[in-house]
Amino acid sequence: MTFAYWSVLIAALMPLFCAAYAKKAGGFHFDRDNGNPRGFLAHTTGLAARANAAQQNGFEAFAPFAAAVIIAHSTGNAAQATINFWAAAFLLCRAAFIYCYLKDKARQRSLAWLGGFACILALFVAAA
Image (cartoon, rainbow, N blue to C red):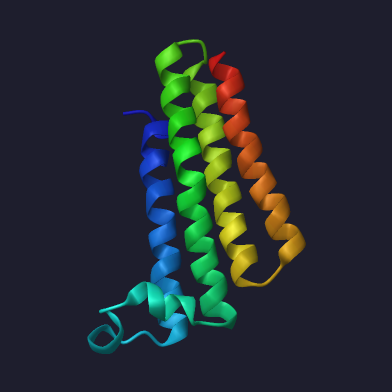
């Protein structure tokens, strides 16, 4: 498998890290809160709420990224190094996005999101 394919798995796991972090930061207790974890997270504030929002955005960004990687591979029009580069850049942008979300740096977070979106667009352009 190519690095870009592995990056799809990594991108799928990133929101799970955010969810675990949100639960830890919010004081989640498995015996008490596992019956309704979404309800628990919906009522968090501060760091826990930001981590939960990063989780949600990660799931939203995952599908277009995964599609872009698969399409870039399947068309055969993009060099593997190009696909790998944009996949790696996407992961770095997502990591920066999560960091900025957790640290409450809104402007930098938006720039990191934009960078990740640009990587998705670049994968589609490379596939054309």
